Image (cartoon, rainbow, N blue to C red):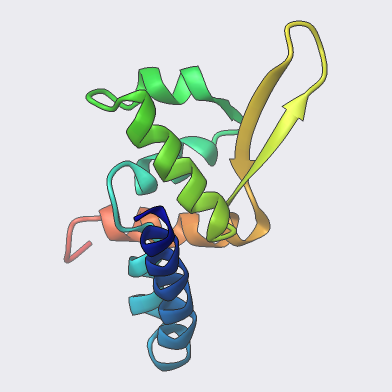
Length: 115
């Protein structure tokens, strides 16, 4: 069962790459669609975020759905994870170069039409 899920994800990312050649917008929407992904990207635009910070900011989310969204954003190359070696040890999530390129598009998508 887990193998089928992994194959499906691989297919989705391969399809996103193929879509990018035909329609970049379609590929982008495929990468950022899903619960919490756009919000995670926007929050990360303000700087590195810890898991607990994201969880508190995303009202209605839970640990599992946030972990899945972060993992998928990492696999897509939009978010990176860094282990901060100070006490207490913690993990931060931050935008990759590719992720920074998507922020202006997300902002534009939020604007009401006609503005």
